[in-house]
Image (cartoon, rainbow, N blue to C red; front, side):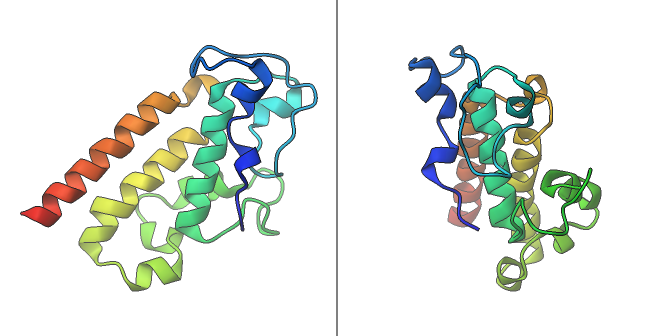
Length: 154
């Protein structure tokens, strides 16, 4: 249940570019941990920052659920993002790891945890074209942080 630094930044490493949104190249020889590698890499898709966004989304969902993307329960068409999508938002309490849920109020669940579930789902969409950019994810995270900080201060 540990994401490794090697699972992120694959696109920049391969392309040799610091361009966060434009660098892309062949995925021949791409390495990473099973469950975190973007689906398009398995079919010869182009390496891009959208693949890194996918890895981030999987890691985020793993942290929230306490489930590894390679758990035995995820076989065939069922994977971690699909499982979360089936339950969210109506059954959000069933998604969140019990250790997190134990110390979380209903308000914290809806205002703090659920936005992160949404980000994880957006980032882990099958099609790279449907995923947000890394910049969009960072902006969303900053907005959540600002909203939570404002709520705590008032």
